[in-house]
Amino acid sequence: MHIASSPSSPTDWTTTQRWYADLLPDFNVFTVSVTNTGAQAGLLIACRNTYDDGTIDTLVGDQSWKTIEQDPPANFQSPLFNDLLNWVDVVDQGVYRTTPWDDAASASFDELALPPVLDFSSSSAQWIWDVNPGSEAADSRAFKYTFSVPQGRVAKYATVIIAADNQHYLYVNGLPANYGASFQDAQRVVVNLAGAPDPDMVLFAVEVLDEGGPGGVIFAAQVVFDDGSSETVESGGEWKTLSATTPVDFMNPSVKDNEWQNAVVVDTTVGSWTAVVPPI
Image: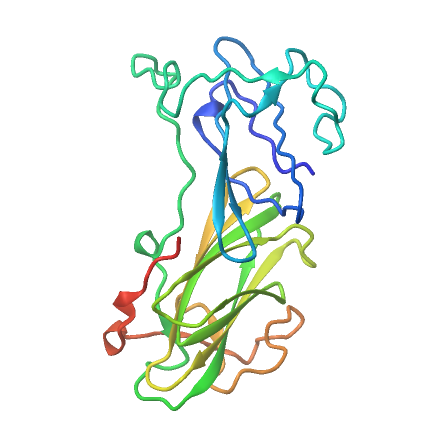
């Protein structure tokens, strides 16, 4: 499965890219085709793999990788391709910030520009509710935000971080994406946006279950496009909500929110929301 291509200008290696891919349950092959336009050549790669039990491991470019000293053969990216014949171990050229890719004397060898990392501390996301919260009885509230995909770009995936007081259910384009049981433990989830029913929009919807007392939700998402660029979606007063128990089908893109009201940015001094633990 083709995930992405980098830009083609000679200095575009100085800007790294971050991508998401669905994995098969048992066996996965990572392949890269690199074109060298002259001078030094190299590949730097790291893959973070997340499993259904919440555990994580990391795959990095090292001497366990294989290469072939010729143009990439046809179908080399196929999991069925035999890489035993004529394929050799790669040459380790050093870790990140190795010369010549960290040569301060050369203007073309600036430090790599890393993709932004999504975090509440670096975002403008705000806690929201249907009213400024006080001592409400236990209840649920629904929140929605429709993100318009810029013309000429295709949304590939979204990284979402979210916390809610007390529990939340996150839906993206009508499909379940994440559950959280405590505002003190923020959740991070990556959602594949390829093949969305409407390629021009992404619908983020959240149901929050308030167990009594102040209720609120805070949300930030980084939507990544096919050209490697990204935009950030953050919770705020432009989100939509209802001052009523959550409708059953509120998360479906076909459900209109014309009669929904704007969310209220809440006074965070009423809760203990500064104690949110950032997601890994």
